[in-house]
Image (cartoon, rainbow, N blue to C red; front, side, top):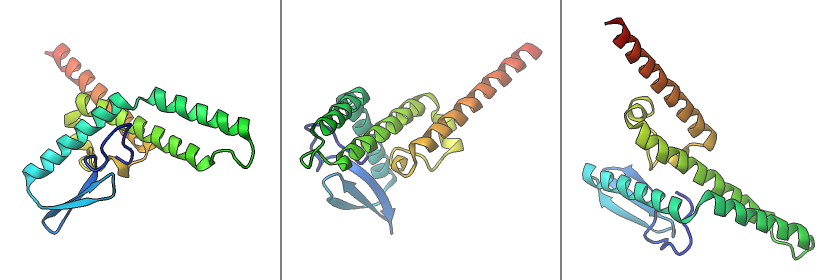
Length: 163
């Protein structure tokens, strides 16, 4: 997670974590970090917290609101069209945020619907590693998993008819 949401406390929002030398290093959105001794339980708690953060952000920072804000900002930039116009870098930040929200939205839906296939087919993909994947890669994974699920369903239906 690289973006928080309005009124979110950034020193409580986990950006990600990594496991190094039997330690868990937790990185927060306010650029602080915390080091803990590694345990499977702590890692599972972190995964749960990241998942809850993603769901909370999805509720607070809807894709529609971000796109509307970006459009208003772009219009303001065009209207001013002078040395006082807002930076286009800010528009790029909106685009990054939109990409991230789309990616997390797909993941949150995939996780519920295709949890087992996700573990078997893409074990390196989880809520902590999601930022290492592009939106396009996540869309391809989703498409592959859906295709695989359809094939499993068709196969089980064939077995029912042949008995």
